[in-house]
Length: 219
Image (cartoon, rainbow, N blue to C red; front, side, top):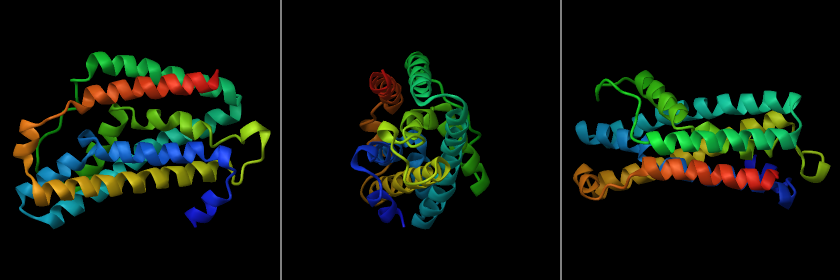
């Protein structure tokens, strides 16, 4: 159904969809979004099944956080013209990026590694929200609520946003699962301790870059 949907969209309106796919891959690579937690559980229990089982509630928690921002965008699109809404989301993204840049080392606290599926869902929702995952994709979602150049949208904005969240989550889950599986089979947590990259600082910079690009496009 999705490929048919994408093929029905004019070329100039594919940008937001491609952005949602790209952000899904980026969120999936970021260990702070969940694959590191799933990997740790798998290694702790010496079970690949435990790793796989952890990924689904993590993806669901992430999707729930992004869906809240989709609802906010949908509500905002009914009361705010598209250009001011684009500027508003870009400005919020830049402001949050500046905040994260000076507070990238702060994280929500968690109690430990003995967690249920519900705990994983709650942890993922909290982490995605605290890192602004939904806010990062908000400018792309704004682009799905209005047609380019006044063209009529191929689907209703609500359906566009619904499929956008599903698409984003599926890409994120695929990438997250692939990265976790590779580290489970080929490497270990010791490799990460020796070669750790500060993804939180990169994430903060990414928020600023995405916000800047969104503001440039809006203006």
